[in-house]
Length: 336
Ligand code: MRU
Image 1 (cartoon, rainbow, N blue to C red):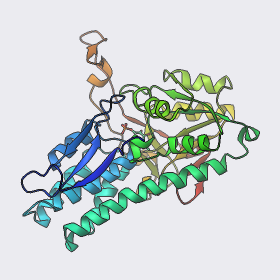
Image 2 (spheres, helix red, strand yellow):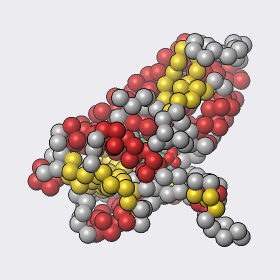
Image 3 (cartoon, helix red, strand yellow):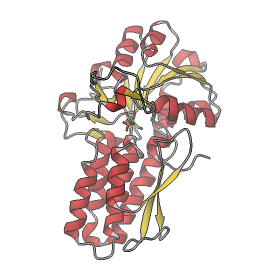
Image 4 (tube, protein in one colour):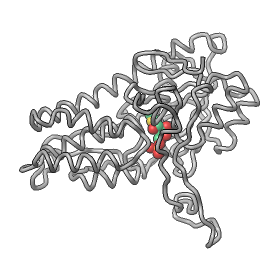
């Protein structure tokens, strides 16, 4: 069984002034599996920025556990905890789950550190339960796809257990269908520049023995156009009130190709990713990351010295291209 991508460890690895720590799988090192212990808000903020912990639901749990970590410090004042919480919430801008998780845990601050930790652990447990509910609901929504035969699926980035504590959203759908013998194969976009598909999604599928092939990002739309894909399933970092979906850069062309080919484009995400305060995709803050992630591959510069890069981490798929947003509570068809 894969370790949880993020969890709380009480009283372990105790450093001066703390009563617990956050354990994460270091996702920068996958497919090699290394656990890391985070004991300070500085370490957590750095881990979020560097994508040691990543994926919208996992970021929500990181935010909540981060507040629990700070409020458990000996001598922590509410003012200090709130200041740290603000830094954690701002560590990455696009996935709404991060600020949401921080807010949920902070709501218990006046009731003391045990109450904050209980709230954070509930965020963790709820996200795990949501993933299973999303998977089951999506499997029944896709019951009649390809006349009930095993499906040829395509996914982008990593919306698996590594992005969500356990099971996953988009990969939770794959896993739920696989349990029902409904997966023929999965095409996995490698997901440049940080290769979450090639390194993390492929790692999870290989671990579970689910047939899959990695493709370069540019091959996804033409695989759909050539009739090689029965359903595209992706996760989301933020879903605006009108159903526009922010997800890893490269998602939008898949939706365009899916609509053109008449293939369902399914977004699997918990309700914590739906942000009613964001009216539409234009209002979503798209994270711009450093040029070196594009210019260097595995530490090697492949581009000429003097070339620069643009590195938006996410794109927005308009609601009218989305066949269904499947959450733990509903099937939402914003495009109809
Ligand atoms: O930059 P990342 O790796 O954090 O981006 C993650 C994604 O885009 C995922 O698809 C999204 O967070 C959904 S995870 C269930």
